[in-house]
Length: 91
Image (cartoon, rainbow, N blue to C red; front, side, top):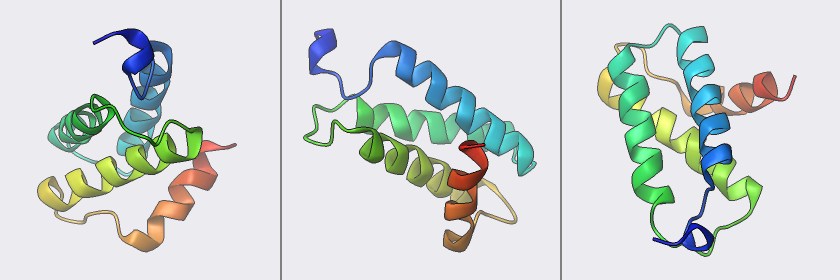
């Protein structure tokens, strides 16, 4: 796949993975949760999507982390916590 066909470029992906790792660490999530969230993100981001803006990528990373927490965590992230994750990452 050509780089211009990707939803997320490599540098952006690295920053997103760093953010997901920080959120998973802050929430004391298992490594499996982090790995699953990155996998989910990559699967969707690897598709050529019409959602090429930063907001769509932010939402995709949040939803990927949320879905993974539902599968892997005893205390998954609630939907109410997602806005707190965004505000925590902007500081």
